[in-house]
Length: 174
Image (cartoon, rainbow, N blue to C red; front, side, top):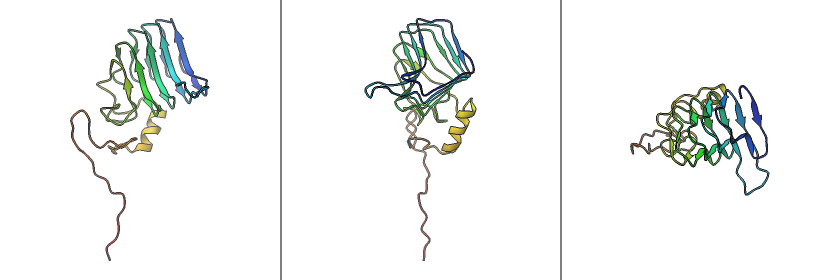
């Protein structure tokens, strides 16, 4: 599945069930909407499949960007995963999701201010720069050197270092 745009779908942008050995590359998956208030939406959902590869995709503005359910051995690398409201990625199996851009050069929550993840997911190392034009446009709205980024967390949670300099307003002296 290559070079597609899926948006404004009900519940799922791309849903693979019992499907293995697929390659999802250079797709844009965003703005998939809820059809019930008690249900999350997923940009990409891999359920009961294995050994799928996701690379070079933009996954943004969904409830959850990517969800894997009982789907071991998937490869999730070199994607831009950002601006999803709940989490960028959720998995109930061990998942290698290294070298992705999470919407912050400081990585996903809890390490930085990018989209968070849930479950036994390996995210380190992550990319400090986006791979797609949509990711670059998103990063430009944040400011490349603005540590507070999207959600404003001036403390690096992995090291405990407080790195923050900001001026809200300057009042001239009389």
